[in-house]
Structures are given as structure tokens and as C-alpha cells.
Length: 407
Image (tube, rainbow, N blue to C red; front, side, top):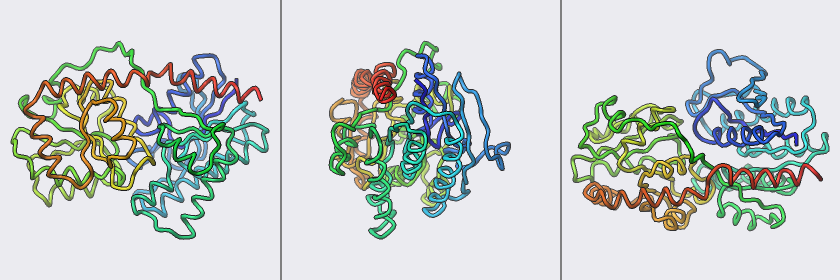
């Protein structure tokens, strides 16, 4: 089978959507498929291209047997709604030309966002006489409206039209959670098109873990400190102001909240920490590779947070990695959203609704005094994550692609 995966993020980006596209491409390559990736130049999560990539229109790299066709995209220094639209539109334009120039694939896998990639996939599919799968990592219109970033207008109607267009013309519509599939049904996508394709994780890593205390020693945190860590993208959807509101309410002086990462909201978070004079909050840059794993080894509890209104429109990519490392999880999310429901099912932590800083502070004070409870959460998470083992998840999806490629 010849497959082309088409999405704006790929390696060497190591957070967000990119690792999941990398894993899919490399799985298909390993089983003998001819697979290529059409993507942008790396920029995420810092929203900055490498200096060597600036001004480049196209380039093809070879990464672990996968041909990676990079296409120019506008990357704003400061992210706004209008600039993000141009960012995504510029990629869709250049990447459509690149996809048309490549040999026909048996099947195209489009990774959304960008939402408008659905129209591009339809166009290329028509010209090449090939089906496409519209794989949704983030339901952009629902998220933007739910978070209050967009109000009902001609523009939101246009976004929903683009979404509906992609769903109608795709051979399959896949989502990463059951909640997303439920939303697709409500939007009129027939059951025969629906595929659950969750993000997956490799659980057979034989590399020795970092030594306990390595991260603390490197960054000057004492062994007796209780580290409650958020690590990942610092964006609007994450609702990280909740952690800053919680910090002054903590009673246990051993608790330290760490916000680790990069993204559009980093500067404003740094400014707020400075203005509020929070001695028990520290901010660090994004940790990569072994450094990130060392962070997890030394974390006492890990946060996954969502802003009010995010709902089932996206699902944090860091979730599985935390559970694989047997980390207890505290989520900040609406009780009815997919994230909170998963936590309730797996019993690997506690969810606190957004806006309840006092409740979150009381929970952290309690957990800091209860290592047995933390250990039980960690063990439950490791059991829960087994269902997302990479080979099992990708084999099922690959079989779906095989069926389309034979049509």
C-alpha cells in the first residue's frame, strides 16, 4: 500500500500532534508500506522556525525510512486568531501543490487541524482518484466557540461548513476519543464512516529510566519538596491560570507547583507569576527526551488542565505518557468531558472542575500527606494505559487503510 499522511506537524517536533503522526508513519513503514509525510517546517511549540528553515519553500528529508516533504508556512511571532488563520491557510496552499506533485497514493490520511485541509484532501483525492481519511485531533470550531474565542457569526458558520464538507467527502472520519465519535454522530456523520483511532504509546521501552533525584538536583529542588507539575503546551485551552490561583491557597509549605513548557501564553504566565509574587510556583522551559523523563521520575503528581468550554474538542497528548510512567494525575476539567470521564473510569487520579482553586489546593495538601494513595493512583494508570499500546492501536487503523486502498 502507498500512503501519504498529510498534516502540519512532524518530527523533530516532540510534543503535541507531531509524535503521533511520526508513530503512524513509522509503523506503516515498518510493516512494508510505502509511506510519505507532507508537512510543514518545524516550529511548535515555540512558534518559531529554525533559522536555516526561514525562507525555504520546500525540502524533502528522510527520517527513519519515511520521506518527509516539508512545505513553507507562515509562522507568527505572536499568535492571534487572524494570524493563526493565515498560518494554517499558508500551509494548506503550499502543501496542496506539493501533494499534487507527488505520485498518487492508494489512500491519504489528513490530520486536522488545520480544518481547511479537508477541502485540500477532497481536491487532491478528486484529481488523483484516491480516498482520504479525515483524522481529527482537535475539533477546532467547537473548541473556539466553547472557549469564547469566537462568537456566532458568518465566520463560525464558514468553519462549520468546512467541517461538514470534510466529513461528507472523506471515506472515513476518525477521532481520538469516543466522545469525538459521539460528536461526529450528532453532526450527521454516518456510522459506516466512523473510526476510533486513539493516540497510542509504546510500552516496551527498554532504555533505563533516569536516576531518581536527577531532575531535582539539576534545577535546585529539595528532595522533601512535593512537586506538582504541569508540563507541555502553554496555550489558552490549557487554562493554566487555575494553577496560579491555587498556589497562594496551599497550606503545606513543601508543595511546589511547576509549570514547564512553551507556547503562546508563556510570557503572560511568567508576568502573572511575577506580579502575584508566588514563591511556591516555578516556571521552566520545555524539557526534551531524557530531561522530560527525568522530570516525570521526580514528579509527585502531574496536572492535565483544560479551560472551561474545551469539552471534547481536544484530548491532551501528554495524557498517555504520564500514565505509562505510573504518575498519579490531577485533572482540571469539566466533569462531563472526555478527560474527566477517562479518569473516573481508570481511577488513576482526581478531577477538579475549572474555577475551584480552593478545592484543588485542599486536594494537593491532602495528597502531599498520603504517599499510599499516590502509589495506588500510579499503579491504576499503568493498568489503564495498556489498551493504548502502539502496535494494537496502529494495526487496527492500518487494516482500515488497507480496506480503503483496495477499493
